[in-house]
Amino acid sequence: MKTYNWDERNIITMDQKDVILHTNDLHVWYGDNEAIKGVDLQFQKNKVTALIGPSGCGKSTYLRSLNRMNDEIANTKVTGEIMYKGVNINSPKVDVFEARKRIGMVFQRPNPFSKSIYENITFALKRHGEKDKHKLDEIVETSLKQAALWDQVKDSLDKSALALSGGQQQRLCIARAIAMKPEILLLDEPASALDPISTGKVEETIISLKDDYSIVIVTHNMQQAARISDYTAFFYLGHAIEYDETSKIFTRPKIQATEDYVSGHFG
Image (cartoon, rainbow, N blue to C red; front, side, top):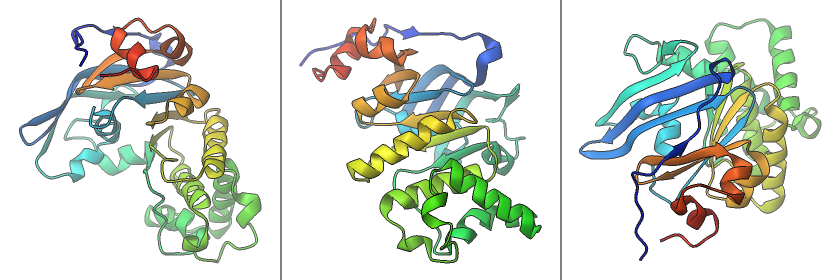
């Protein structure tokens, strides 16, 4: 088995005016297991950034850190900074629920509520105090249009979300996330449970959304990362090894481990 020098790094830096979110020396422990080992990454506004790497490399753990979803896991410790608009959202003083309104998340498997399509979109809005029916109707339509689902469901908004196909359910979950008007969307392998046609529709949705949102996506699919992302970070053993424009990562990476991974000769 080939061995690598994991001290090598190629991590780009960006003009601060273009950066919407960045982490400084981020570490995540599950008990005694250090899953993320001092990751410094910057994410650019209105771009899609892919996080790639082998199973167990830490990419999903890192993604969940960005809106503090790891807080929900027992015996987890997170240190370092997660900077969003000049605020370290990893601070205990930060309202986690407010942070998650601005940094939304869509999970690996579609998880619509056991409610109508309409209620899936409005549930969180109502809990945050929005009662204006006209405004709720507008948000439902706008969110479903942005998620490329409106034309398919506009005449059946009162039907159960669970009756939708898997791909439609995932796009509904995207619509539900963007209904809260976040600035950043985190997507954890959003197409891994879908068939190729549904995957293509979700990818088209992601590409169209970057006009309005900054997107960070974890994917195990190299072709998907190459198709939809502007930047790509390669993770291994809890480290971010290489981070650059996607075109460079897939055609002329600077680190041997990255080249071996994207070319399928890893290990």
